[in-house]
Image (cartoon, rainbow, N blue to C red; front, top):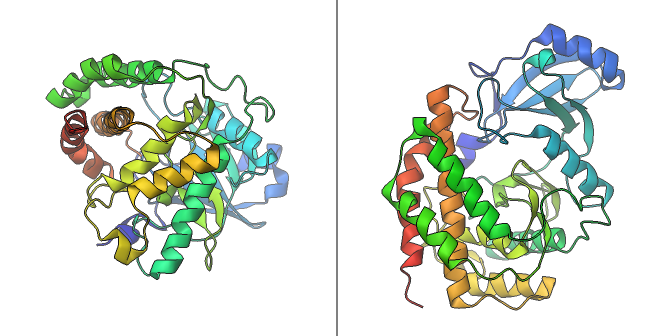
Length: 356
């Protein structure tokens, strides 16, 4: 089965993610009557963290995202933060689904949730965007590059997000956060390469240059909705990991697609870039830096950025492994992500040994 076939579309609500239709219907009737009478709910197949549903009413189709039911790690799955950031970005004209309503009352469906606009379009679950011609594929990559550069160019104070995260020391704080989540999740076990990275990363972080922006935290092709017939990015999805941080850290997470193997979500290492119409890693990085007015990172800095981001992604996969053990994993593909964690951790450590 292709990645596209595996992740796209919706299916029946999975065990453990059921919604109490009567309570949800009553709440919508009292707080969002314009959204209409609830008709049906299906769960999206994609996504790894916050369960996401397609909600159909007699007035339209909407998307519901909720915090997973049951025990979760402290600070994770904060749907109220998602709602806040997309509200500010939508107001600023950045392409996100229109936020509709937030419910912080856990007694309604068992955890906080929000509803947003259902944006129609095309999602490419395979990062090489099969079925596109090379020139059209190049245009789509350019649109992704333009969109993340636009995000990082927003004035966080002007759009009301100046307090969305702590300014400064982004890498130190991120390394501490993901190291802590990795080390504290006893159900997911330990990995020798992750242990090495926990020690290596704090010693090799670049000096903070004061740059600050909204960072998405998981910017990939499959978290963007494109227009069905052109390269316009209609909406960027999945803001769970967003915060204030260093734009280069966020962009180089996106840049990992060049170094991740094809069997890992978002990766296409080893493909013939020129034949496909995909820009080289160096050109894609240079284009972004030109758009945001930054000097490209040195080889040593890029080595750190890649090791850091692969460690961070491996920590996310490690967390998915823990959620499987706790019975709160949101995606039908969670086991695959958990199984990929040791290989990704080894690849992250390999970045630290790259010859400069």
